Length: 448
Image (tube, rainbow, N blue to C red; front, side, top):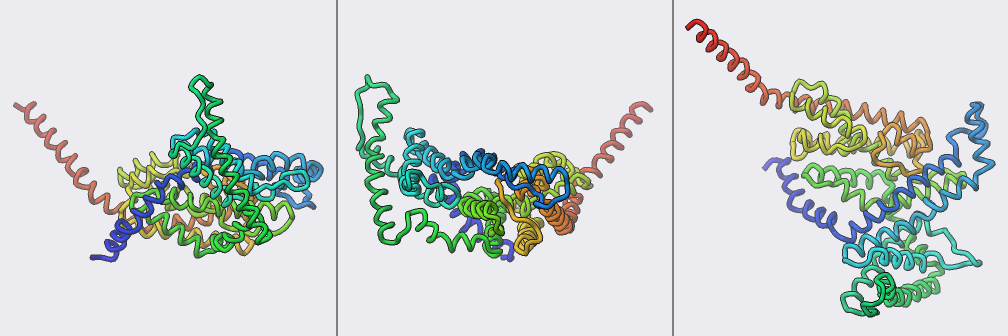
């Protein structure tokens, strides 16, 4: 058995089944959909953050820049208020989304599930202090707590429902009222279990639950920002994709909590005027590693447009517009790149090279780090600059990685094109022969 066959066989037998189970697991899906539900608030909130921190130095001589900087200084708190109510408390929205989606999976009332999740999260993450609710753990630093408490509260709700431990009112009672009463027991038991646990942990450690959880996850959060961790995630995602499994969906779903924690730390540092600490956040993956989609295939699509192979030209035309917006299923399955031994090395290797180049560029301060969430369908040049506060450096880095991708894809593309041309050649030779044969028959008929 060749090395290629051995690797593919190992992935199919050992890794793919595990990845498939993880990707389809209902808790993982609920967390994923919870993040998706909160995405509009995070995107708009991040966009407003850029208004408060213009991409100009305070001593800029550019007239427009001076006006923007002055406006931001005079109205900082006014501008930041929408940010604090969206991105600043994003974990509340995520908790509701997780609860709603998991409850829906269990055929429970989604609204009640979302409210129960929110209550359980606030109970342990925002204890009242000085007459107000502290917001320290309502942002990215409370992500892991929100996931844990939301899953717990819905599992509790589902357990009680199965055991019929609920308050049922007569059928004559309006449905909305009946449903609200059904939540009484889950709320009471949730408070009776979570709140004492939170108090005991605070008494024993001096930390509230989200602070304790963040300390537990701190090594993982730090490790997630390392080049080795990034390369491992990229390799797993693309190997799964190569086997026909949506690896990006699986890997990025697991990375979202770490990305949001890193992004929240960057935003806090920006507000305090400190250096941004983290490299690995969502835009780093979307706009530096996978330009045009997994495999960084945008350059490959451009090559296809001028290919001598009719098949590749048609795939290039179909894939161009989607690739601009980082959607590359047409080129992945149309080429195909999936299970194509010629394309394995570039499909997996080029994103690894892009990740390495980008990581060093950001880690050394040559390019600004990211401070905001941007829709993943934003074209890479625009998205990278937007997510970094409209800095120019990310644009240059995207172009550098684009050129690297082009150079590295070229020899493999040429090899694959040559193979397809050899397969297409008999058809092109056969067509003229058929034409000549038909012409001969016509000529013979006319002569007769």
